[in-house]
Length: 160
Image (cartoon, rainbow, N blue to C red; front, top):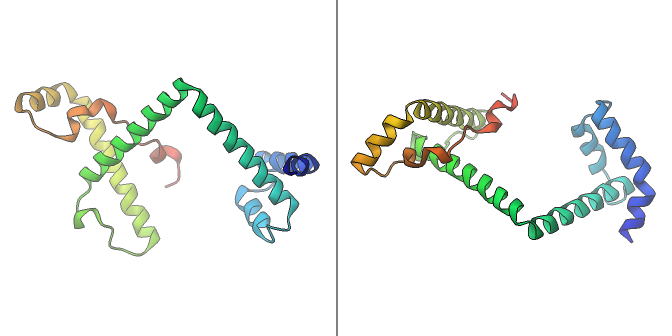
């Protein structure tokens, strides 16, 4: 039974978790170590089972908690709105990143997200005027529902 495995490895799991939290070992190093011989590694198997338990608990919470479902749906809609707007803002080569270099691809994606965030910030500052013009002209533009867009939080994570 997997519960027995988690129980037998619990002390070790907690030591590893504290080591990551305290910075003794990086999460990347931990993952590398756990992946090597993963099927034979009891710690890896116990962590995998803990992850499955957590996913099951979260799924059950999501299924039984209507306010949580509404919050998740609202957040998902905001992210999808941002992505649609970002795609609309994107330019050059019909939004296709032609470079195969991952560094250049990441630069292009971050530049597009930065441009989108900048445009949203400027439009929000001018939103009353833009909103009036759009309504009078009955234009179908992405800024029509600008209040659904928010700056992309991943930009400010410091991973530049």
